[in-house]
Length: 419
Figure 1 (tube, rainbow, N blue to C red):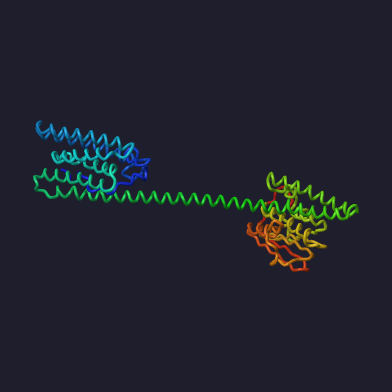
Figure 2: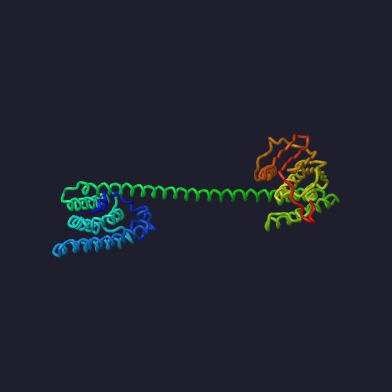
C-alpha cells in the first residue's frame, strides 16, 4: 500500500472575503487563491481521483469475497457521490461545511475498512484546502491523514510502523509545500496591486504635469503675442488721443491699427496651431527683425557667424523672446535705439537684445501679477526648457541687455528655403 496516500494538516485556507467567497476548482481562474486552485490542476486532481477510485475498486473486488464487497462498495459509492457534489459546489462557491464533514467522515470509514483506497487521499487533500478556512482545513486534513495512516497500519497487521508514520510525514510535507505556494501567490498579488496603484498614481501625476506644462506654454504664447500687442496698441491709442488731431496722432493711430491687425492674425494662429506662419516662412534674421519692428520700428539687426537653419522649436523660442523684449522696450524703456544681435556658433545660436533706455534693477523686478510682469519669466522658461541659458543685464539709467544662448546643431538644408 502506498505510504503517501494522505493529506495531512492543511494550512489555513484563504480568506473567502478576499474573493467574494469563491473557491471552486473550475472557478479558480477568477479567484486565484494559489496555484493549486488553477483550473487545469483541479481538473487533473478530479480526473486522478476518478482513475484511482476505479483502480482501487477493481483491486478490492478482485481480492475480497462478495460478502465483504457490499459494505465497501456502498461506502465507495457514497464517497464518490459526496466528492462529486462538493466538486460541483466548488465551481460556483465555497462548499458547505456539512457536505465536507460528510465526505471526510465517509472517507475515513472507507479507507480504514479498505486501505486499497488510500491513494485517493491526494484528491481529498486539495478538496479540503479549497473547502475550509483556518482551523477547519487543518482538522479535515488531519482526519483524512489519520484515517489513511490507520488503514495502512491495519493492512500491515500492525507490524509496519512506516505505514503509520509515512502518511502523516508526507502529509506534513505536502502542507508545507502548499503553504509556501499559497504565500508566494498572495505576495505576488500584493506586489501586483502595489505596482498597479503606483502606475495609476504615476499616470495621474503625468497628466497633471502635462496639464500644467500646457497651461504654462499657452500662457507664454498669449503673453508674447496678444498681451504685448494689445498693451502697445493701447499706449499708441492713448498717445493719439492726447495729440489729436495733430499728424503725430494720425501716425500713432496707424501704428496702433497695424498692431491690432497683427494681434488678430496672431490670435487666429494661436487658436489653430499656436504658431506664426507669417514669421516662420521667412529666413530667421528677417523674421527676428520683423518681430522687433512690430514694437520698435527703428530696431536694427546684426548677424554674426554663418547663417543656417535651426530647429523649429529653437526658431520659435527666438522669435518669441524678441517679440517680448521689443514689447518691453516699447512699454517701459523709453529707448532711442534698440539692436538685435543674432549669432551662429558651431553648436549653438545666441541672441542679444540691447536698448539704451531707462534700465531697471533685475533683482527688484516686480513678480508676475494681474498687472503684468510675466515677460522676463516667460522668456527665461522658453530658453531654459530647450536647454539654453538666459540672462538679463541692466541698471537704472544704463539700458538693458537681454541675452540668450540655445543649443542648435546645424539643420540640413531644405531646397528653396532660406536659412
